[in-house]
Image 1: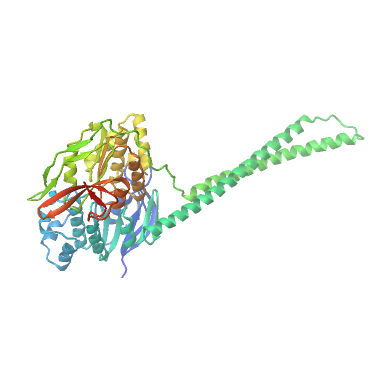
Image 2: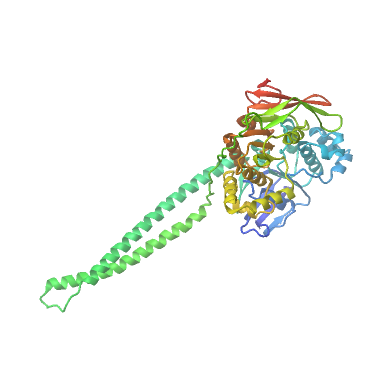
Length: 521
């Protein structure tokens, strides 16, 4: 028997929100994977929590299946059931540990695992639990190309109702039978993967804009006709009032004709006024009908950062050669490292080789004022997110306006962002970047900058960073993003089980992780 997760006239808003995130949604979600698509802050995570039963709708009803699991974006804490998964000896547990390359020692050292390793563990545990409804929030965040392929293979084997929020278009296309497109307060179900759904959405928006333009022009013509009728009526009325006739002689045929004409003109004036009112009413009805087209507001995308180049002649960061401990006996060796005011550096390497650990070292060696540094980590805790939002809300009006302008051009709606508690991880990253931009940064350091961001936001971020005149250090598994923005690479390579080495290089293009395109310096 087919199993369905059913939404009936579902609406939802968080307490204190002025508008609904979701309004009157009807959807039947069958077994297989369904993508949940929409801009940052649109309510994708909220949709997953509603589906998993972690939130109750404000209105309407959700017919839940008997078991559900929600795997959140964050990887701060071990997933529920990890200890049971560690001890499990059944075939499913063994296969998942093999497919996702889960090592035995990971269970004992969660705090020292990379976010990519934590994400693999999180997904393995919820898949092993085998719920009827599985809701995954950005499952490919933090993971490298090899782990991503492992993950896709594991997710293809899931037999229940799967809900998937991801900015990874290839993942959505390869797994999903349909997608729910959320654009508050509307949510629309479309068949196929995200690419097909986005193309259908594009066509619908083009058609809606065309219809809207036709209605707009028709309303304008009616308004113009109404105005013309009114002016003619006023002129006719004025002529009638100016004609005064004394008592006419029976034989004054010309005078009688002028009097009859005056009476006729008065009737025409009254008729003209009535026609004008009728035309104005029809024009107003057409104007009101335009709201039915559901046309999304389009904001100017991308923004130019203010002049941010450091006045320093040589470096914004300098580190002498040394070694870093990565836990246990594993060491990361690195040479002397320098960053000039215009360098654009990609830090690459597989999960667990110390990229985030290296960033912590680098941030302690910057040669610029704290106000001139933008540092955005992989993960921002809920408390940190609240503090950032409070800081933004307390800004003077003019500064708040500058920050919100940047946020708009990164693809988010300021009003919804400021009233959401807490903002989504993608929105918090935009806020942090926008805050830094208004202060004229000399160095921007971002750890997995495309994590948590929707596809249009990634394009906006790429455009903004490509125009910035300051130094960049980017850690990312998104090779196309790095290729577009950087020209030097610090690659972390494993030389032996206990030795990782940083190899700096000038790059012609980003290839996989095999040094193709690198020119060693």
